[in-house]
Image (cartoon, rainbow, N blue to C red):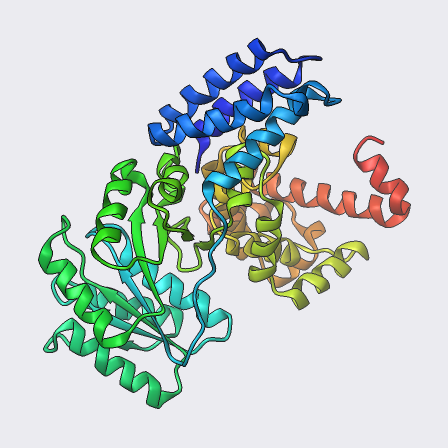
Amino acid sequence: MFESLTSRLNKIFDGLRRRGKLNEADVDAALREVRLALLEADVHFSVVKTFIASVRERAVGAEVSKALNPGQQVVKIVNEQLIAFLGEPAPLNLTGPKPRVILLAGLQGSGKTTAAGKLAKLLRSKGERVMLVAGDPYRPAAVKQLQQLGERADVPVEADETLSPPDLAARALDKAQKGGFTVVIVDTAGRSQMDAQLMDELKAIAAKVQPVDTLLVVDAMIGQEALNIAQGFRDAIQITGLIMTKMDGDSRGGAAISIRSVTGVPIKFLGVGEKLDALEVYDSSRMSSRILGMGDMLGLIEKAEAMFDEGQAQKSAERMMSGQFTLEDFLDQMKQMKKMGPLSGILEMLPGQLGKQAKGVDPQAVEKNFKQSEAIIHSMTLKERRDPEILNGSRRKRIAAGSGTDVQDVNRLVKQFREMQKMMKTLQKGGMKGLGRLFGG
């Protein structure tokens, strides 16, 4: 997400930070580079023009000239203006009598059905009783796809291809009221292009169920065409929010930056991966931090809290600090990391120097290494996992054969494990002094 843009902006800002003082010409030169970077990232030209003008107005004044670190002050101004353009976060509307209906609209291929499943899982994790409605009888296997997603999210799906989508939605709402459900998510049919039939059907569904939120699902990878689609839907029906999908596949990110400013419709969620839990609540300040290469530590902490088993994590931490850390614990740590989603998404949340160093890491190579390490540990006996000291040559050959790896791979894993054990012993013996030694202090 935003890799190309972030890389360009980082180079520009690094040049500004190295200067002791900044004059108007320096600021103008930097802003010309920022302008080009935004245009190349597919940000709408009118948004770029207004954004650069708003930054320049502040950046050539006393706010920068009197600052102790002028370059850093310009970056601060860019961040604040970018947050303003990205728009205030607009939470999902879950007010009013239950069940509240959320209607999803969008073109075919935008990821609407998958977004319905992700949203259902997210709301269920927050204590809502959710029902999904399969309102797309036209696309082959659309109903089956939603049923599979509902099963994975542990959410019931109301489907009946003999009924029209408006009648099905009305029946589902009635069932939800009688069944004590709190949220009904209606997936609707998409078309290859906006047409009167699609809009009339959406209006008919909305009239039957009175949604509290009508969310337009937009594919971030189609660039500025996303703006035209959003404007077309907004002009035809009352869109209250956006879900930007496939954000993890869009290295430019221009549509996400432009869409709020151009359409006036708030972004509410970001689809950041294929997994059912890869849906993020939109936050403009966090998005700005990622775009400017500042990371998103708060998002990373929330992701960890959501995925980690607190009791298991506490137990592992105690075992590590007491020197009882085994290969079983090592395996558990890897599994907990994998729950947080693709490594590429985790790395881009790291701030500052950590984030820059992380860009040199190949996420695919690391994930391949994770899988290999898991296979090796799974090929060990319980005794071997708990006491790696007994791993002689013949045992290592057997483990390598059982895991489809080489003996060198087994040796590498054991070496990594021993280094971690040594690190834990250093911390255990020295406390804060040990921590200082560990990091070269």
